[in-house]
Image (tube, rainbow, N blue to C red; front, side, top):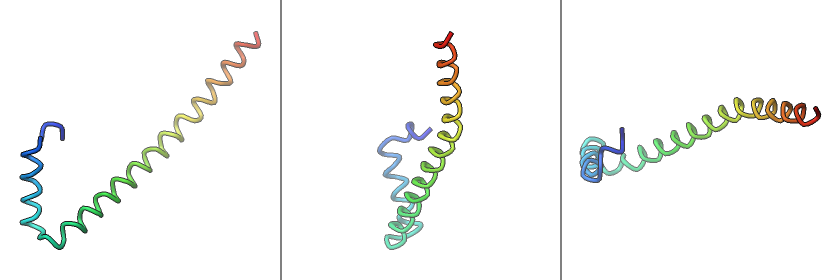
Length: 69
């Protein structure tokens, strides 16, 4: 979805944000968005590892059982 915006679209969005929020507030908003994305990424990694680790353990146990036969 965001890949269709392009450089002119991003520039337009930044100009509109600058007009709406002003030059003093814009860096604060950018930092908040960055921290939110960082936390979201961390949470998704934790969630996927909670799901994939047990599956990998089961696969390893199944592999050991088939090798023993």
